[in-house]
Image 1: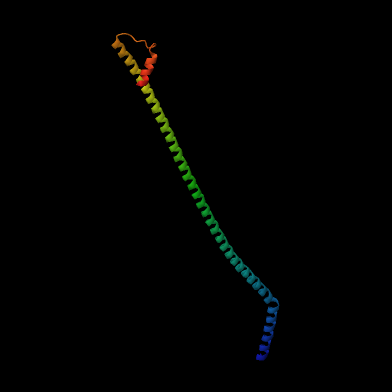
Image 2: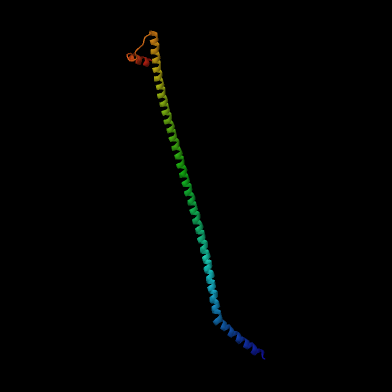
Length: 156
């Protein structure tokens, strides 16, 4: 065989194969590669968008957490103020009740003292009358001398 004819035949077969590949094989491969590149680009864009969404969501979550903490602190301070006010009111009410009880006890003690003084005056008056009766050796009529006895009680 001739080297030139073989070389020429191989060149023709190569060119036909190259043309066939360029016409029928290459476009679907390029189309698949372009679709794959598009999917990869879309995936990268989605990943970038997911990153920005995640950063935005994290920022929003931290803002919400900060707001919740501030709200809880405000609620806690309000509750502490209410508790302090309730304690102060309870102390004032307790002091008022103690003062009222003290005044009532003092009034009761004064009334009991007055009753005891009256009873003592009565008793002293009876003893005075008994003593005077013995001194005079005669009976004194308490009904007849009621004014004298009342005056004696007031002097005691």
